[in-house]
Picture 1 (cartoon, rainbow, N blue to C red):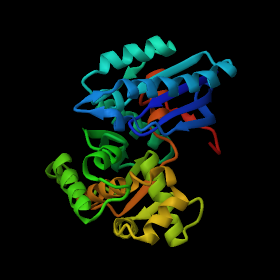
Picture 2: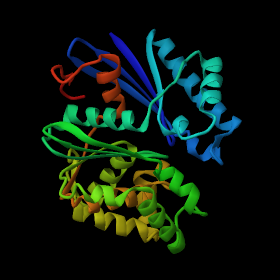
Picture 3: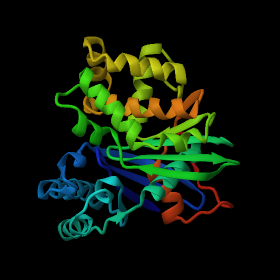
Picture 4: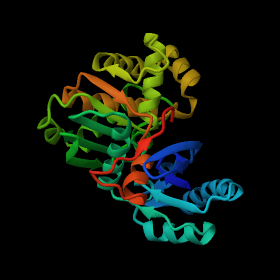
Length: 311
C-alpha cells in the first residue's frame, strides 16, 4: 500500500510517500517546499497571503500524488497553524482550495510523534529528545524506551529570526536578543530536573543542517549521525561570529537556512547544556514516520513498525 503524508510546518512543508506493508515501511521519495509560513504571521494572525502560500504548496503536492495514483493522503500541521488565532479560518480555506482536511496536532502530539519516529531508528533505553521547528520546540525525556516527560515550547528558529534579527544574519545585539528569548521561552528550571539526559536524540531540518555543518568542519564520515556536546558548542560559537567564514559555510552547505540556522543551533546548544548531554544523535526519521506509526497504523507498544534496510 502506498501512503502519502504531508507535514505543514512553520518553516517548510514536506511530502513523504511510503510503501507500507504489515510491519515495515519504505520511503519512496520526499519533496520539500521552504514556505516559511511563520513569516506570514502578524500579531498571532496568519495573513491571507500566508494561507494562500500554504494551499498553493499543498496543490503542488496534490499534483504529485494524483499523478502517482496515491489515494491515501494524510495532511497535518504543527505550530504553523497551531500557534495562530485564526486556525479554523485557515483550515477551512485550505480545505476549500485543495480538498484536504488538515489535522492540526498539539505540541505534545508532535513531540511524541517525533520521538516515536526517532526511536524507529535509534534504539536507546534512556535519554532526551529534541525537535526544533520553525515556530516551536518539542522535548521528550524518556527512560526504559518510554517517554515520561513531554514538553512543547512556542519558540523556534524562524520565529526567533523574525522577532530578533533585522538583517540576514544576527549582529551582537540580535544574538543577545535571541539568547534572552530562548532562556525566557524555554523553561530552563524544568529541564534542569533532568540533567545528564544523554544521548540527546534529534530530528528535523535544523538538526540535520547542524549535523551536516559539523561533519564538514570536523571531517566526520558521511554516514556519521553523532556529534559531541563539545563539537556542538564550538559550531555554535563559530556560526555566531557571523563573519565571512561562517557565512560561506552556511551558504555552501545549507543556503535555504541562512536566516534560521543560527537561532536553531543556539536553541539546541542551550537545551543540551541544560541536560548536560554528552552527545547528540540525529535520526533520519522524525515526526512523519511517528505519525505514520501511531496515527495511521495505530501500532502500540507491542507492535513496532520497522523500516526496511536502507531507508
